[in-house]
Length: 301
Length: 198
Image (cartoon, rainbow over all chains, first blue to last red; front, side, top):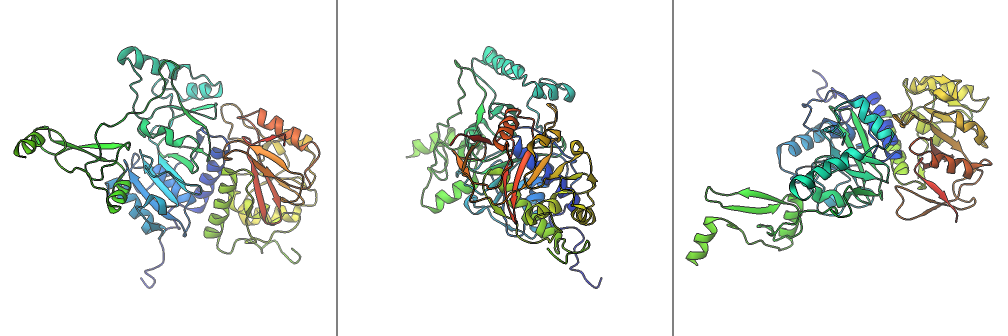
């Protein structure tokens, strides 16, 4: 080969016609917040379930001046995040970061960063099942009519059944929301802990479901209300423990098993938030937080 | 744009120029009322304004019929078809994008696709050229994308504009999405945006 630098694919991988089609879908999605716009999802060089919807949305909006952050369950350093970040570094030669505040585009799998997003930032969610009614009504023809007629009683029945069975709303992730008083939307499988962050967020939020071929969006400052009942208002979980590494409280935690004697610790799910706090001098209690190892340690003291 | 021929005036670097235009348009849609400048990356024949041409060059292709209101728009239509492959339609109901004329009579806007309740996205995007986006009568707008309220001041809106926009917003989720255009500048009024009494 005389010109090894000649690219074998277009900027950001997708061809221009595909980008145009996705861009038109994004504009309609922004104009109808919460409505799932069908689009002609393409095969990507990664399997469905690895964020092909989010990748296609990101590829269609991405420009050479963007700074991209990719997270998977809050972490910048897990397989899905690393491979998608490397993918765009390769096919678009785009700058990447792990710092939430430095990013212009954040592609996420199942978390919203703890650091509040700002105006001008774009967050792209990877969505497995975009249809909030799908597990209640498997037929697409029916769910489409239910959205058209604003017939959302079934979702409330589901939440009510939670209360009847468990005494409280036991849905903890992919918690359905109502957008601007019209469309019920699946926020993707983010923990319901993150639902309040979507409400009137100053950032533009885009959702891509590759296998299911849907794109939807929330413009900045859009009302996003988690469904609930007057006597069972929407509540997010609180964590008793502080982060073992950075001492953070009131953030979403991962529980990490540390030994086979009940030892475990809680750490921030958002790795950037945790690292930033530690670089600012915050320090957690460290190991062990719970379990027999902790009792031994305390006895030795 | 005197001297422009059919074959000239397209994007010189389509991948990056169309990406830049799209991002500005997306920002404009995400924040209704914000004026964005799409620049002069394309030089269309008249009566197509630079911002309308940049929008169409970025978003139109063989999947998106375009409708021209101006009777003297043949050169512009041919230019668009050559550069994008988009078909020019005579039937407003089939148009994905509509290039309106200045002072476009709003009574005709009901002929455009508004989508149906099952597919409200199958609706037209209208491009309306106005005299200016900055020094007209102030209009207060609110809706998704706007933190509280915002003020736009386009000059040269057609008669009956506010009533048409009110009925368009009332038909939500059906309706058209409107882009106001002046020169290379554009502001978006998606169907969610409501004009309110100042």
